Structures are given as structure tokens and as C-alpha cells.
Length: 200
Length: 151
Image 1: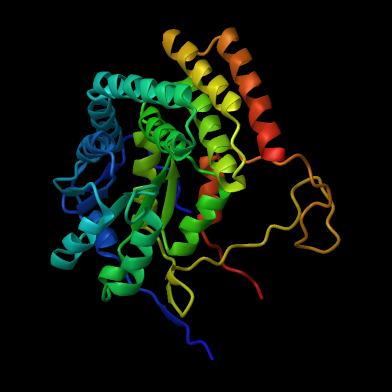
Image 2: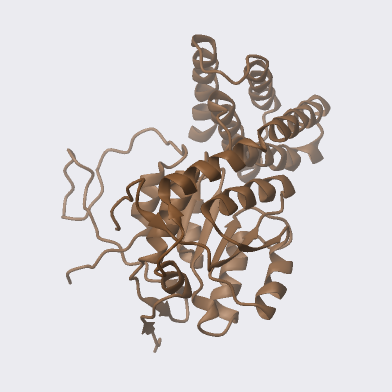
């Protein structure tokens, strides 16, 4: 994972084209202002994922920010469509999925539909900019197979959580605690989405 | 047999962001924060409007309002997530959690929804500030959430 930028480092988003997709027009306006603040000069906006598919057929973009929950076609289906139906290299366009209600099942769903990153709200410009910078240095391979099309999902198996003992290396803790489905921490999400080389 | 194709190519994002120029990270963040802030007032008005709709749907307690509760709460959460709304965000997240679970389990508990919506109103009235009161309210909501998720 790329190191954090210093405030004096330069970031150049002037030449990129961003597609923003959110069915909530107000959220779209806010996101648009944030991206504009980053220095993006060309952005396209859509309040419907279905409409966004038509936009992409006409014009390639460099980055897509898409909300997860939308009527008609949601963010997950949109990313699946992008990865499977668009020709290369458009199907490899980096995608950041944005979600408010980030339960772990949905983060896993985002990863499995082919998203490059998931950013959970509360959203800060600092987190979003950092993820865009990470994506610009992303060295992940792009995988195409029958069941999955998207950035390499291989993750390092960290074994049982620290301080716990599994039966085998790789086992989870034997203690099943109270069910919790709170908002995943952004770092935990990044860790889930960011693959690492696995020694086999 | 499944065929797996693995490719490695540099994205146009990488290439374009590697071009020298642009602005400093600090300037980019300052401008983005400024842009975000310019939407705060309108955002809070919309949040207040969504809360009223949630209150109305909760008061009706109609079976066809159940799906609407999650949709409204998720919309509110989306907007609240852009601004510093601390306890309101947490209360709304909890409401999304329970509404999502109750829809999956097809067991709907209106009092649990009502206590969340009431708490959100209380937090809004307090300016979405974290305080001993908001912490106590959130602890109560957490107990409700855990009870529903444990079922």
C-alpha cells in the first residue's frame, strides 16, 4: 500500500475525467464539489447507473465514483456490468464504491463485484484523495474468469486474530462472541480490498 | 475447465496522475473542504426533511412503510456522512442496521424504529453535538440494535 502523502506533495488530477454516479442529486453535488477541489477539470455526473452505462459507451473515463445503493441498477450491478460488458481497457477503469451503511457483507459484495476500493461514510476529502492516490499507484493484476472480473482479490491470510489461538494456522478464533455488524473501520475495509502476494 | 486470464496494464488514471503539475495535497484538501462546506446548510435542510418523512412513516406504522424506513434512513445516512453529524450519523447507522435485519428476517418491530427516530430528533434538536446525553441515547440504541441483530 502506498505511503501517505505529505501536505506539500503535489497531486495532479487536472487531466483526468471522472464519472460520478449517485441517485441522490444532493450527494452528487457535494461529491462533485469535493472532486473539483482536488483539481479535476472534467467530470461527468449521473443520477442513474443505467444512464451511466450509456455515458461510458460513448466516452471513456479515468475514474468512477459510484454509490452502492441505487434503485433500478445498483452500484454492484453497475460494476459487474462495467467489468464484464465493456471492452478492454474500459472494463479495467478504477472504481471507488461509496457507501453509508457499510456492513461487512456489503463490503465483501463490493469486492466480489469487481470494485477497486470501497470508501465508507462519514466521508472526508482526505480519505477520498488518499484512495485516489493509491489507485494511481495500484499494481494489482486484472483477473478475468468465469466467476469474477476485476482487480486481483487475493489477500494474505492473517490467521486467527491477535491474542487468540486457532486450531490450525489460518483458523479463526474458536470463541464466537456476540454478533456485531457495526460500520467497518475504513482501514479494515482497505485491508480487505487490498490484495497482497500469497506464498503458496 | 475454467480459464483465468491475468493481465497487468497501467491505467489511464496512473498515467495522467504521473504528469507533473497539479496542486499541493494541502491545497487540494483545503479546496475540497471548502466545497464540502458550501453544501452544509442545504444538506442539513435535506436531512431535517428526511427526518420528518421518517417520523411520518413511523407514525403510520403501515406494512408498506417498512421498506421506506430503510430507504429514508439510508438517504439520510448518505448525506449525514458528508458532514460532522457525529451522534446523528451513529443513530441513523443503527436504524439502517435494524431496518435491514428486520426486512431480511421479515419480523418488523415498530417500537424499535420509533425509539431510533425519536433519538434522532433529540440529537438534531441538540445540534448534532456529542454530549453526555447523546452518548446515553446512543448506548440505548445500541442495546436495541444488539437485541435485534442477536435474534
